[in-house]
Length: 539
Image 1 (tube, rainbow, N blue to C red):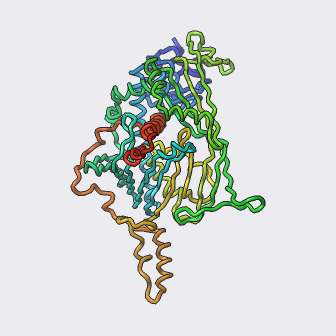
Image 2: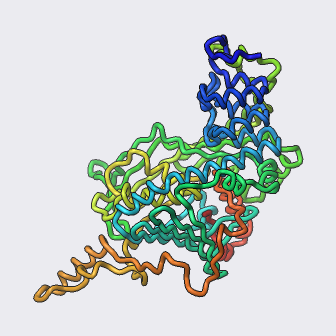
Image 3: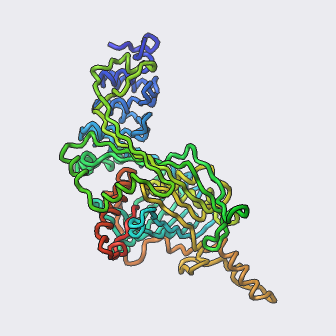
């Protein structure tokens, strides 16, 4: 028996009591230890794993169940950057994946609810506005550039209310879906109402998020994944894409020739912006396949189209200022050959041995140069007005999550009227802010402040017109009807039935790649009708 008194323990069982019990799969003793609450459930062992990470990697289902039931964080990454869910998938244990996936979704809901009061306060303090965010995907590969998608998000913010309209919804079975949807967030004193409005089917799916008093068991039951969702993970590669910005630096772009070079500025949607280049941006894509059967590995390798082969060649040769480094790793897993003393000894080198299944890993590292167009006189505030919107959208949209990660860097001064950042391999995303408060193109639901639109007696009409245009771009009034369910639409409680979306980065990146490959293979004959009818995007 392991001593109950922590002070009486020696060696790894004293330094890492929870890890030691997990190592030996003693889930009943682990339950008692966790209930006592005297040890940090998120403690890291010398290999950078929490007790939950270790339990998952070893495939110890009951230990994982104990830790999850007592609040172990599913979202933590280990030293190598893998999540608990990704390690669970590598074990090929369907029940373990289902358990981890359930608690991951449950914890996401809890964190989402906990963040609502802060979000409501930010929205309340921020000035009301309307803005359009145009997303365009670009590539240095000419053929890919022709089929890259685009979409324009329309964003209304009024008081504690938010509405976002889009026409590109996501994907189902790796096929991009098109539609006409509005997403409404309406804040109240003690709760928030979230609506998804399907304008094609004239249906509104509504959900009330209470800020307190949520029943834990009900939330856990709602987070139970289907067997189909679990199987889809076990039969697909684990893919993760990260922007490494730790060495990023910003420099003003120059224009001119020889000794006449000056700092570059451009006009973006009527605003003068300084152009910056961001260097030392690395896009790291890692793919694991050790959990796949030979049959599924064959499907992954054998589904190449002519365009996919071309993309592979293009990636290897790189593009302008884009270099690609591809490495493959095969680890040796032999837990029986590693003792607890060796594992928990920080001075002992494991080499390429590790716990769990032998890792089959392919890593692609590409260097990019991002670009920023910053306007110091822009009416919008990135921190006060736009950042809360991006935070809210990032909860269920991995593209917005990448944008959030970039804008939270220490940027030069000014509002980013346009941003170009790498998203996936040979694909960049260009985000442009425009039509602020309907100043460029009229928006029926938005009008400028009345005080700025009515000329005072005896004033010069031309000067008032110019002044009112500027003023109305800085303030606006938004119709309250925008945040209500449209008349004649059916209103349903809860979320829509086809909630097969998964906002994980791995599925997002795989979907972007597949959509480009499929669209490209259809368009090799020269027709671009597929792009116009089904431009890809994720929400």
